[in-house]
Amino acid sequence: MSLTRRLAAGGTLAVVVVAAACGSDNSPTGPTALPPIGITATAISTSSVKLTWTSHAGDNSYTIQRAEGATGAFTQAGTVPAPATPGQVEFNDAGLKVNTLYRYEVITIAGSAQSAPSSETSVTTKDIGNANADITGDITGDRTLYADTVYTLKGFIHVTNGATLAIQPGTTIQGDFNTLGSSLFIMRGAKINAVGTASLPIVFTSSRSAGQRQPGDWGGLIIIGNAIDSRSGTLIVEGTGTDGTAVVSGKNYQVAYSGGTTQTDNSGTLKYVRVQFAGYAPEKDAELNSFTFAAVGSGTRVSYVQSMAGLDDAYEFWGGALDGDHMVAYETGDDMFDMSEGFQGRLQYLIGYNSVQLTPRTGSGSLATDLEGIENDGCAGSGCDNGFNQQPYTIPVIANFTLIGCGSQSCVGPGGGFGMMLRRGTGGYYVNGVIARFPAAGVSLRDAETFARANNAVVPDLATTILAVRNVYMAELGGPMFQANTATPATQFAFDATGNALTLGTGTAASLFTALPAAGAVPSGVSAFDWSPAASSPIGSGGMASFTGAVATKAGTFVTGTTYLGAAAPSGDKWWSGWTVYARN
Image (tube, rainbow, N blue to C red; front, side, top):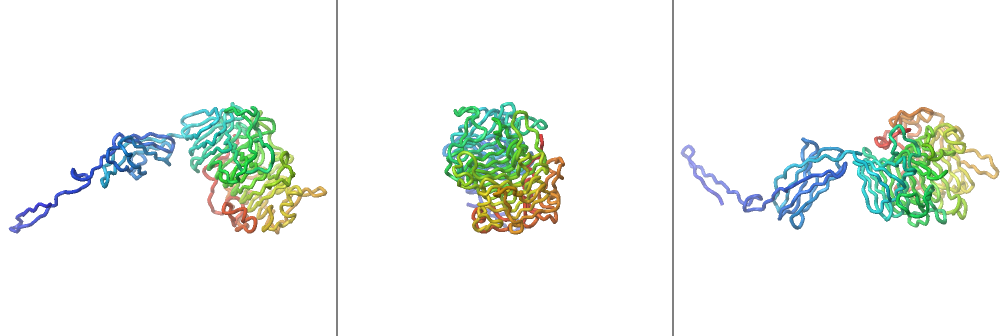
């Protein structure tokens, strides 16, 4: 419909046609959409907000608009459908910044109509650690730990009954110093999903304040999977059972890890996680580790993790087939990386650094007398029915490792001081590594059964062997590349240096890296470390760039070759930066 008007303009008639508004979405005769009413915003955590409002009849969906800060511009944060009948609508907004103001408005969609924005509402996400909570009993149902709360483990806490423990980025979990041995166990069938970020790592640490903390202040993180272990019989996690065998919530009852059948078992995910000042011994000579992986399967993912100032091993693997990458161990009381009992996993990008054996808390356990960088065993002790020849063999892939020792026999014990201790029938592929400042030797290749894994060859054939040490640079050792043999028949063996691309350099360890404190120096902090090869460093090249034969088969797509040696690429990603720490107390 139109209205025609005739106007006189200088004696001329002008015809103007004016169209009447017809069919616009919000006209009385067309579709309409009303803004939501009663919109509220509630901070759920440090990184999430819940919005609620009331819907109208005829609403189809809603567009949520978000703005950061008091003056930021609105952008779309998401959409949500309307309920079938009018009522309350919810929208959870995640991935937000800690302790930050956000403003929200909501737009209704009804048919082809779109409402004006609702009135604004604002909310500030929670701050990290502004509340406290104790965990005193086993966790038997799914639970989430939030970064706004500092949680204290008061006892031996087990996640059981197939439950999943989720931990948000930035969360701190303390082992109670006053509750001896406080620890966290993820039991077989349960899962932990602790996924932090580089800017918001998840931290397990001592309940004591900085400056007072010591190795052994609390137990550690122990994960039990359903993968295979080479020992027969019933196997109990070292240090458990001091409160008996009865399952009592929060007590240190026996935890078995034997009888697993599934190498691909999934116990969850750890990413950007630190474990600090752990390793308490619930009984004499049975210290827990910072990270313990007992029969953990390859479905579990472990990336960007750090052990700092633990009393026992930084990482111990008993059987299983865990895959891990970007793993850091600073100032261990025992081995940096310890694998045994048929461990079949693959690990790439490892950093270990020791400059001192720190004084543990009184009564927490004993420092090791045989500290090594890597200590790998086959089967030894009870349940090894065929001795060191018990199968499945320990055959990991360990690639791109940087292991720096303290340089003195006094801080590794009389039986320690080897960059790698390979013994008791172990196999494995150890490639593209750097070993420095170990006072005894670079490698102890020990026991006839171990040498047999290399087909008794000084240059193992990569097409068939299950033991090889290739493309490794060693420097500033207190002894030879391989520990010398003094027994008949031989108990110590060596690989040919040239045939295996093994180098014993003449320079210092510090000269290899962009930044590394001199031997004997106290690091000023985490900024004292830059593990990237220095300019013209020999470790900037010389790597096994591609794998062949048995190594390629074992590595699969998880571990890849590199042209460089050690844990960091020349001019590459400084992957340890921003989330690792260095602290002696």
